[in-house]
Length: 458
Image (cartoon, rainbow, N blue to C red; front, side, top):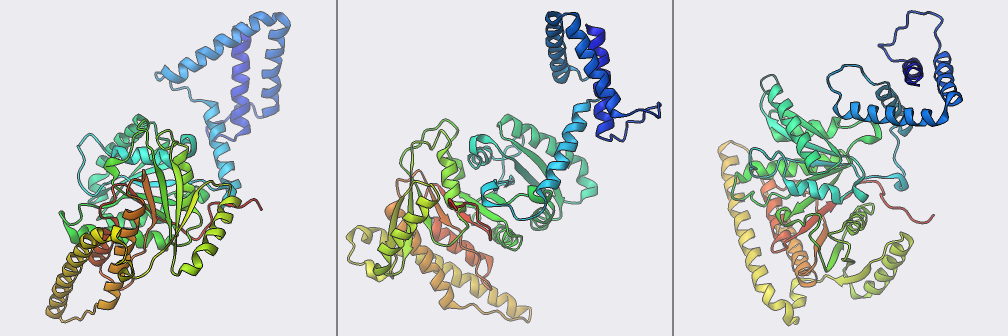
């Protein structure tokens, strides 16, 4: 029985290697054909059953156990595995069948690019923020899907190539430890901006390229080197917009719940701009996790006039019904700040918000004056539109006040990520963002891309 199994295994290996055109397969017999090996393997199995079917089953079971043991422990022998060639060819054919065309929303899967390098330092033995790996799992249904964990080393590639290999192995081991399906990549570049720009252009193959960039919101940008962090953050967002990648920025990452930390309350979505349904899809994926399964979704839509509220609410309810998504729809009319004076419940928060607004505006004025002095010293010129700055500050201030009013007890809040306005320095954009996220403990800022990720019945 075991001799016949051995002959069957040899024939099966020859069949796979010849069928898959393995470069290392060079048989001496010039008349060899894969069909002969297949017939030989089948004949061996048939003869085994003709001799004794009970001993055949026992032999196959023992051979399977032995193969499984060798796969796990048998690293001493360098025998190779014919099935690895089959997996390789299957992956190539699958990739070619996917092509490079636009993926239909029914077949869309999130492939997050996790930006491991946080804004701040981690312990030496922790290559990635542990909560980033937890959040990456929250973006995949039942944990299935691929994530790409990327870290950037500053320096010259010739000098840091070996260090990058060691860091890649450490990051890969950490991903396995966190039970997150994904691959690790370490990039060496002169600085973070250039490294990310290379990643966003080249990472992935065909339709298996990452489509969502996930990173932590730099809450420490003011304490650290404000200019470097703010410029890098804005550069990453602009590169994602140019490359048509979605962006998810996590504020309050340290407070993100673990796998078994039960959350209650609501998942609140502030749906301001069309994002292809990415924000809705992320909220549904969060509900599939044990930590958020007890939460309910609330969709807040912003209307400019009271007359639009009911019509907008009806349209959004119909849209969610067609998408087969259950959520409560709430329409908010966002008027000017003075229009809320009669609302006593907001009057207390208004003083704190106006104080934050005044502080941000003062810092922007000082920064603009400093920029102007530097440009004049260098012989250049700069101009800042004060009206536009006030408009952005008021808009983010009102949105922050609205979120604090309706979603102070929410488990997590999702809001549309505003793109960096053109001709505004990165420092100004960070001031706008700080006003938006102030006093909100757990916030996801989401920017979709020019593709739909959800689909209707039709």
